[in-house]
Amino acid sequence: MAGGMQRGGSGRSLAERAALSGAVPDAPVPPPARPAAPPPGRGGEGRHCWVHDPPDAPGTWPGLLVEWRQQESGWQGRVTYAVPGPAGPMLVESWLPAARLEPR
Image (tube, rainbow, N blue to C red; front, top):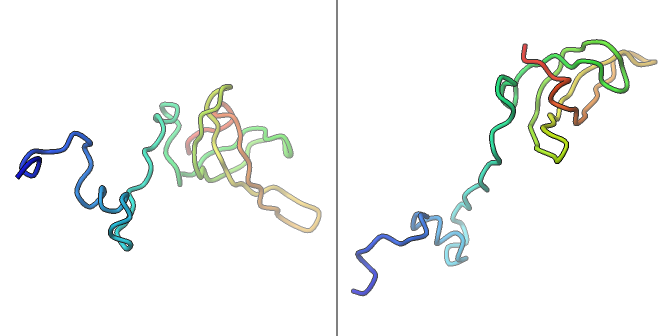
């Protein structure tokens, strides 16, 4: 059988190839490849961190790192943190430069 016994050059499993072909509608599609690793020593996603001097609230605030992205200007972390507001604590979500984030 031509090509049946040799491993394909794509590096994908049969299930992945079937999912991408559309031949098996309920097959899971593999997640996209992750970008290069975030800055060393910065911790991973879903980790507590210190947020230093965000634009809306100078000072240091406890936060949660949600994800990383790499821009031309360097790495940025998407974080959530709470700051005092006029009616009590406000939850803020923002992309900040990696230099403003510190692992806890």
